[in-house]
Length: 308
Ligand SMILES: NC(=O)c1ccc[n+]([C@@H]2O[C@H](COP(=O)([O-])OP(=O)(O)OC[C@H]3O[C@@H](n4cnc5c(N)ncnc54)[C@H](OP(=O)(O)O)[C@@H]3O)[C@@H](O)[C@H]2O)c1
Image 1 (cartoon, rainbow, N blue to C red):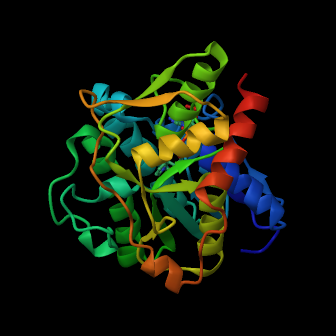
Image 2: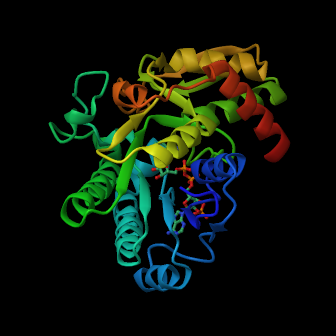
């Protein structure tokens, strides 16, 4: 990518899209075309086609998607499947039609079968049934990565995909109804500390495992791959996981809350374990820099400065 190349980041106001924007700026790229959801609804095929025809971006990061936690995914599988399919099909097809030089599609590690061996290797894709709590979202992500793969194979387009583990960071969604594990815990512990509550309850048994990567690291990996990699999809992760209880304890420490942590086994906790195999990414030369505690501390600082 030339530093003056025209780059479109779909979803640049989201957690990952904004991190990719910051990383690109840090690396000296300066020519962007950016549209918020309000300015361009990516589910609108005509609007997306018109946008690509007018702007003719050279490089595209597709980081726009309908994203949510377990509760939102279970309540609205239609929207998670439909909107994500629409966004992906519109952007990927228009990118091909307007001869975009390279596109990166952001998927998710929930594409893997729920009973696949751990760590999840790229070749385990479509070898079994998906986790039912976010099946609609996962089906859309599989379709997106396959569409990129087919464009590569059939038309020689340089479209690549990455499948990250759970992410957290700045501009995350801290809404209690819609948030993922880290923002949900940050908010819960912060509120409990503020109100002087004696305990905080985490969903599920606390024994499920989760891998977490700071979104700034995810963005670093995306730009790294965009600059030098073309080929099959790649997992992005930190290569290790923690129990939900360990994550809750780490957040409690960062927030400075001294109360007790309780579990609620009656609440859903999604997949029991989900850690991606990062062998392909490591062989390509990328490894993360921050520890979980460092990433959580930076995220909590951001939350206090921007959400309160
Ligand atoms: N967060 C994670 O843990 C995680 C894990 C694995 C993979 N990913 C993937 O990483 C990508 C980015 O996720 P994120 O966490 O950064 O999500 P996010 O913070 O919710 O950002 C998504 C962005 O997409 C925009 N968007 C949604 N629907 C749109 C539409 N119809 N038209 C235009 N823009 C639209 C949103 O705008 P509004 O907010 O205005 O709707 C938002 O700016 C997604 O593909 C996601 O699947 C995320």
